[in-house]
Image (cartoon, rainbow, N blue to C red; front, side, top):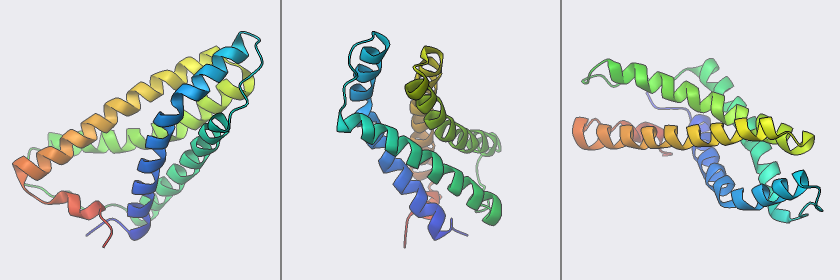
Length: 157
């Protein structure tokens, strides 16, 4: 069994949008710091893009999670230690939580000028990088060590 076409499409769309968010990070940090210092906020289209894309990521992630609950996921490939299944479940569920909480904390930080929310947003951003690295390492392990071609399940036909 593969992931559904919707799950695969949302996976890659969200991935590309997350990359865009990291590219737009500096603009919103500068604008946020200026806003906190009482300086005129930098009215940059990059800031608007970051805010808008963040909201889109949150919505698409919620939709993807709903689809996951509704249609399920492919069975585990097997042929490797069960600890990998547990780690995979934790990482995947963490992705959903982080990708939903990031736009919430970011929006709250921006629209409420909340340094605490900005700090939470920064922590979630760091956790997302960590989970992305874990995810990539798992892909490499499955591809190079277990040679189970698990990656085919997340590619569009």
